[in-house]
Length: 262
Figure (cartoon, helix red, strand yellow):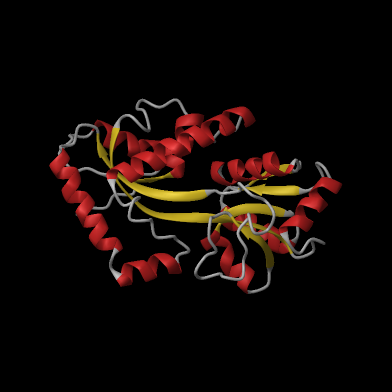
């Protein structure tokens, strides 16, 4: 097996290569919410993110954390929303890519709040500015923020998943924190080119299921703040259903807010 990291254009260069590849099961795409949902709404692509691939299985899902600088007067999500409402357009929300941009726009839609967006070239610089107090809040993947939360350098208000993270049981879900519906997951999946034979898809799926049942793999994923997919999601039909549902949920939100990628 050769693993090739093909970067550029929000992952669409690599995904496009798989869309054009021979459908024999030897060229696959490990993609995610950004490459197979968001890109379809913000880019003009030479392929369709849903229709031009054969789903194999969901691999893992990484929720985001709602975090803020320590100097904020809020200590929980309800207090944060109250502070944001009391200071419309004054709060500075760090934006590190389209994922965090969409996530904070979704927070605003659900809570009726407004903040000024401050773009960054990645989560690292954005989080450092939250530590320094230059910006106020951010949505970012849990793995990026948890070390700073544990060191007491930033505050964590909620995790955007149905259940608490196994490695951060003290951080409430957004619903527990008073914001029902705030669920955002940077999930990953495995796809083959369209028209890959069913028996090939079945063989690849069996390999995924076997790997995800391995306790060592499960521990490694959890250590990376990744959730293990359900048995249903570890099927081609499960990935297809999740993929379609996420497109139906996020495309209208992305297009309504006018989010563009750089």
